[in-house]
Image (cartoon, rainbow, N blue to C red; front, side):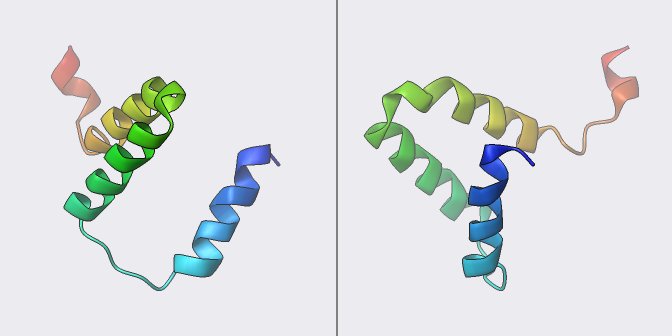
Length: 61
């Protein structure tokens, strides 16, 4: 188990029944980066990864 899994598990336990919009999530990520600028790159990578989840691998060929 990675250290981050504990945070993910807490998120799931506390908010697992919540439904949120992508706009809400984007605003929370912006706020987090504003408060924690050292995390700008990891948050950017997470956002791009989430945005591209449905992309076909064949499109990049």
